[in-house]
Length: 291
Ligand code: NAP
Image (tube, rainbow, N blue to C red):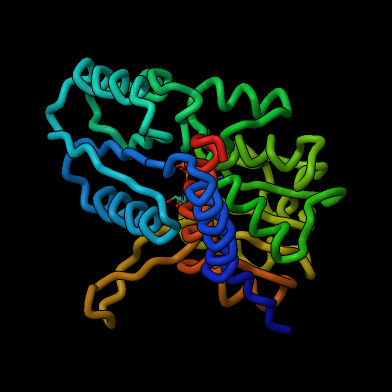
C-alpha cells in the first residue's frame, strides 16, 4: 500500500498563517514589527537563494528584513564587529548568520558572538544548553520543523520509538534532545544512529518514527523500514538528471519509491522538511521580538 504523503508545504503554510496573524495582532496593538537581519558572507549561490527565500517569507508574514552582504574575504574580526552592532540595535529582533561561512572563519565562535535572545537559528551554545536542560527557548529551525510536522500531521512522538540517522549539531543532535525531552512533542524513546552504528538496518527497523538526516541519497531503503512506520526525510541532495533542463534534481536521503510501499507515511523531498525549516525561522523571529 502506498504511504500517506506528509505535505510539508501545506503544513508550513499553516504555521506561516499563524505567525502572520500574530504579527498583525502585535502591530494592531501598537507593538514593533519583528525584523530579521541576515548576514551573508561570500558568493555561494545556494546560500544566496536560501537568504532570498527567507526574505520573501518574512515579507509574506508582515515582518521586515534586510541582508548584510559581505565579501568572502571579510575577516572574522569585521564580522564579529557587525554582529556586536546588530546585537545592540533594538529594532533588530533576530539575526541569522547564513552558513557555511568561508573556511577562514570559526563558525562556533561566530555563533557564540550572537546575542542569544536574537539567535533565531537556535545554534548559540546558550540556546543548545537550554535544549539540553529541557527548557528550550530558541530551537534550531530544522529540528523544530520536524517536530511541528509530526504533531500537525497527527503523529505525536510521545511514547514512540524514534530512530534518527545523523548526529549533526544542526539536525540530528538537537532533534534527539527535542523528541526525548519531557514536554509536548517529546517523550519519545530516541536512538541516534551514525556512521559508527553497527548493522544500521536492524536499528532503523525498530523505528515507529524514522528521521533521516545523513546527507546521502538512498541511505535508507525499503528493507530498512518497519512496516507502518512514519518516515521523515531531512536530506537534500542534488543529483544529475540529464532529462531535466537544469541537468539536476533534488532528492532526499530515503529511497522514496521503495519506502513509500512499506511506510504508513512519508515526507517528500522537495516539499517536506525544507518549507518547515523556513516557517520555524519565522516563528523564532516572532518569538525573539517578544511575540
Ligand atoms: P552532516 O553535518 O553532514 O551530518 C550527517 C550525519 O549523518 C553525520 O552524523 C553522519 O555520521 C551521518 N551519516 C552520514 N552517512 C551515513 C550513513 N551512511 N549511515 C549512517 N549515518 C550516516 O549533515 P546535516 O547538516 O545534518 O544535514 C543532513 C542532510 O540534511 C543534508 O542533506 C542537508 O542538506 C539536509 N538538511 C536539510 C535541511 C532542510 O531544511 N531541508 C536543513 C538542514 C540540513 P558521522 O557523524 O558518523 O559522520
